[in-house]
Image (cartoon, rainbow over all chains, first blue to last red; front, side, top):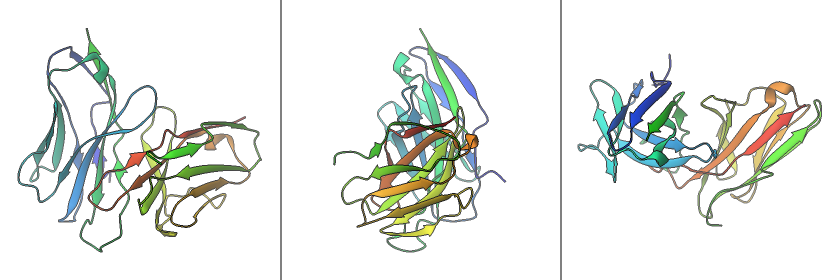
Length: 120
Length: 113
């Protein structure tokens, strides 16, 4: 089974509008972290936002917010007031077992990504 | 250094040759990861290092792939007898620990002809 599912291969949004990129995850761990990354056409991976499974409030970073619904195992990224520079591929990722052992940092598992295009 | 440095940025090699890809992580980051991204695809995990040891190398696709890390710093990913399906962007990332995200390098684009 896929651990991270991004069901939207491509999305379009009008400049200055908000957009939600979907992400659902699958884990049996109680302690995990969820991440979103942006990959512009230049190829670099840019960290956007993090949500811990025990965080009670949704994470926010500027125009980015994470709509975390733990019971539904979803961690959707909301981008408000879209800008042309937001056009990129967006990846959702998860790290499981955060509390298993100190000093051991497990890898992130990535979804297949959503290509966002912001229209002028 | 200030960021994760990867070299070379581009590599074209002939099928059957060996290649070495280098990653220099952020100073003080104990965890280091290698991923592969084929054209238009997501990121495929290869291997991760905690210090100089590799607790998880489950993502290495075949025994032609190997990696090492020395001094808790620089890592080298080696692909022996390259095949055309090895063509991809190889991304390295480092992290301070469990709850932190990665800082990625800019990748090495490998083309096997």
